[in-house]
Length: 521
Image (tube, rainbow, N blue to C red; front, side, top):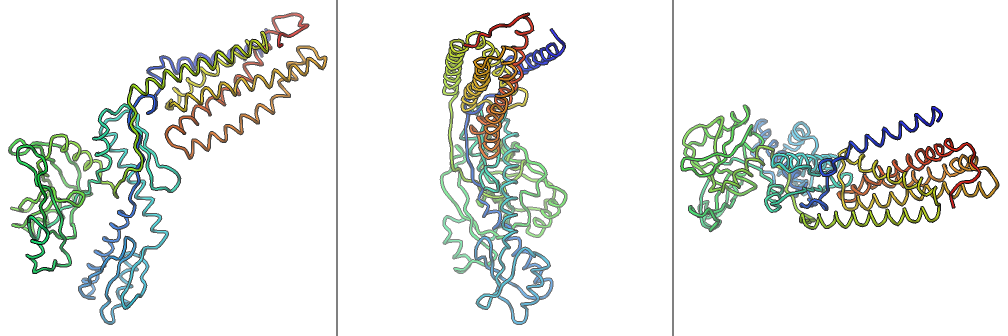
């Protein structure tokens, strides 16, 4: 055996050993997807308009504050939509207000309309904020899932520039709790109470002589039973619209126990947040402090003294609710609301059935391929069978090595790759047959057969590989699983059909002194 055959054989043996070590034992090395292992699949939409509305409110607040600083007067801007607000301009103050806008929030374009000044969000800034909101939501969801402890989750954005997020959580045994954890915006605000609680909003409005002040709004909050903790009613509070301190100012949040061993959330502020909270509580001693979570009043304790660095949230929570609330506060509030567009739950037993059916389909398909190759190509068909076995080994070794997830469509990709690998051998064998019929010797026929079929094999594999790359780039979930196995399988097929199969023929020729015929049908 010449050196070329020896080194090629060592390379093939090395690849075989490495792939075997990479995926064995398969139960530990191969990660199963949602459809095989069981779990939940969610497609979520980020309500980017919420994040844009929040930016609008900040712009309004900056305009009012700066107008008072520059003696323009007490402005009362009114929201028009998520991307626009209007302000009545005092006489002779238009240019000054426009200058404030350009200095404080240049991303809003001022326009005169019906005697008012309307600020509209610029289109490029609208796209930037929407993209930022989705990316922040993606990061926040990822943090929450990691804090919850789900193994091997898949969390990714769907499409380019879209507002949807795909979440796949294999092995989850409490899908309802996960969905609640993901969808909870957990936007925490601390607002001063101006009235309430009351049984109806009308009672609060009547307390203000039938007209709420411009900086006050009514929010509802639950009434819970002291014993069971169940919600038994709703009460209403009149609170200030602006929040000087929010959940973004928190440094940490953790579950704890209150004075009467009731579950509570303990939190601490950042340095700047603590200063602002101290100013807020110090200036409003004796008033109620509404702890507002997702625009609902969780509790409204009385401010007895100035508070700076830490506090608690008490709201007749269960222990599970306290743990989840601590998680979402600690990992950060979502920048916008979340809605579920698609939801699928796969049970572990269904996943096990899919694995059995997939293995059965693969074994039956492989057996039929082996039978066909032996019948049609005789002993040369054994060459293709050896290459096919190595092909499958490389696929599973590659999945384990790259940490890819095997899905049910991925099993279909394995079966499809087996067919393509055999197809490559068929192209080569038929070329060899043509050369033999033309009267060439077996050695020459093998060389010419591989050389002439090489272009066709490369063409079919590369076009399919490009398609698989697009599926992987733009697909989600099971589609990506199919694309991953297809890409690994196509690469393995090129290696086995062109390199391994040729090496096997060369070994056979080197072991025979004189080759007068070739068993290829």
